[in-house]
Picture 1 (cartoon, rainbow, N blue to C red):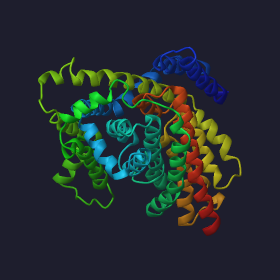
Picture 2 (cartoon, rainbow, N blue to C red; picture 1 turned 120 degrees about the vertical axis):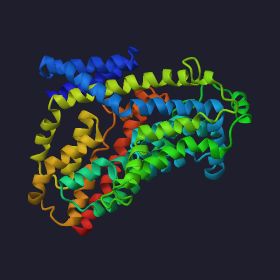
Picture 3 (tube, rainbow, N blue to C red; picture 1 turned 135 degrees about the vertical axis):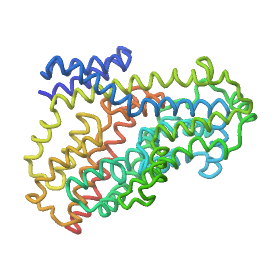
Picture 4 (tube, rainbow, N blue to C red; picture 1 turned 45 degrees about the horizontal axis):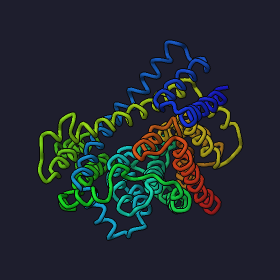
Length: 444
């Protein structure tokens, strides 16, 4: 019944927002409360779960989105984004923007959360797409899939690390199998973006003409200065990830603590924001007012945050209903070999939205079964971890906060998001599983 209710809730969200034009925020909140009532969650827990999911999502990515939008607005209004676009296009070529964003997302999401990476890179992505005269759908889809692949597969992202710990797998082998599993999805994502996503047109900058852009470029800062608000936060976040390695490469003293502080996504992006304030040729304090560039950024950020947080409420209600336990118990009794962790993780991801939660929950379910299943050697354990991490990509939809980050920051409708990002995560997850089946067949 819980699974039937989930399907009905998703159908309601899709139909109400596409056919009846209901705002996604309202659709998600109504779906969350309706699912809670129908699934038998105690009345006092329904609203607390809605509030908890909403609040936890805002607390985790709210400031990141706001500051990211401010950086993006300053880059766009100052002309810096378009100067960066020209520089990148000279290297990758006019028609290779999706490939560039796919690869960029692939590497950035290893140390950086996918949400933060997408927010930071969106201004550059829009500028590149506008300059190259291509649809934003293909480049945004490429960036989202690139970030998703390594976020789910390659440590030091939290999910794979936690799964390796729970299942007592060698982290080095998990990194190697994760990288091996990520190559085919990268190729599949590139083909998907170029052959399918490119058919959908989304204007990267609908309110700007070529003349407006050229005028901004004439007064724009240098390319080197323009890159700083993006590059500096990414470098700081990466340094924090390195500082968190078990080997403690920066020690445990004051320097490590400083890196840990300035490498937090919020702090790193605030530093990037200050650097963005230096971009305008003639700085005016009016730019920081509610009617200036900051005010414009906050207006766009508010919509994104509200919809994303409502998605968090829906995801929390699903977790509160116990659907993860139902799916885990149902699938764990089946004799599916290496496909068992993949299917459990895919079911949990689809049901409650979070890849990290799906990975950790599946690892907890599978860990006691590893001996019975015959997965005892180090390589076998690593393959099993990567198999369940592959499943955690399948599929991203309306109960996943990253789905809303991708769609809302790229101007995609929910229907388009399903056609591009959701379908893309399904194909990438299946593609990641195939190398694991091959490794298992050869070495195990």
